[in-house]
Image (cartoon, rainbow, N blue to C red; front, side, top):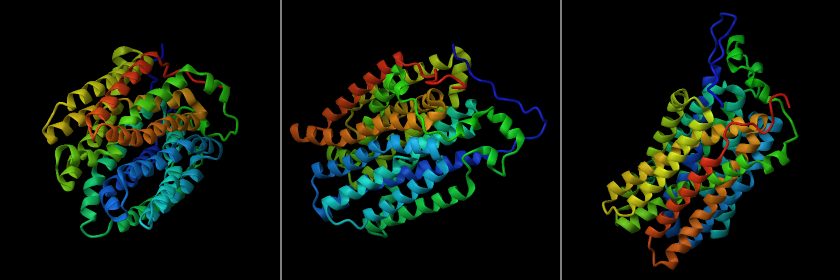
Length: 433
């Protein structure tokens, strides 16, 4: 039975430095940037459709291009971080996708916007696998789940407040100029990160010996390698269950990113400005859920006495709660209360995130980037399917938005089954292999 690892105590008596906390800050700010860049297109969709004449189906395919590229490049991005280190990888991918974000404002047709959004997705694919690799090498085990919770809270809040930010910006600039402004922010982050960060904390001048003792050997995971235990990865039941549960989580999440403003306008007949304010709830509540899970996880483990059981319990309850709340949501007619309930469903969804990404770090070990990339790949296959499936359901049902919501609730129940069966702590490779 896996139990909570105790923090290492420095033997030297020297006070540990806190360089690892700045690593968490870099991760948090990048998570915010990724979701601002993604959510910008969702909020700008009405303006894009009016100017370029796109249908819902065509917008669905533009969204699909991002998710397809994101899915395809997840494993290469994570593997490259394992091989050459996240410092060089993140410099390249963040700079690349930031240029693509700016380029979205220069597009003139369905083909040009689809291709650019595909390239944007290919760049963003390297972000979270490499941040997970950073956490694996820079944080002691007992701090990793909490860091994941804080990072995902920040990601969700970045997406939550983007609608209002974009609406405010569009009073002063065009939707094209808004994309260009957001693109500059990512380039600045990439340069600052590259200057400060080192793949191995032992090589960083701000890390003293006492902080290295706290890491308890985590820095050894920074060793570059080219061999990934693909056979063990593909044949592992836990890996497959990680993939499926993340598909379930992401299918619904991408609805919040890509279709929620349109859903609010068409279902509740609210203005675009009010829809932008209401669209804050799911991602805002989701961020609270991720942070809550990250902060409470250690207490749950102490109460239950097992990391494995605690992860299974929290994640299963999260998926079940999200399913029930989405069913309840469909019967609410007031837009404010409907979004509060959907927000609570998102809270439950994001309770699962720290357990899922923590499992990637524990199961993957020095291959954490590759494994987390493969899990996120499955999530983005769901993200690619979700907007297109929703568009076709709407066309087939005469724009009945309740049916896509029912589908999302049913998918959560599959996630419950996955977490009942998963082993989220046993590594693919025993220590020392």
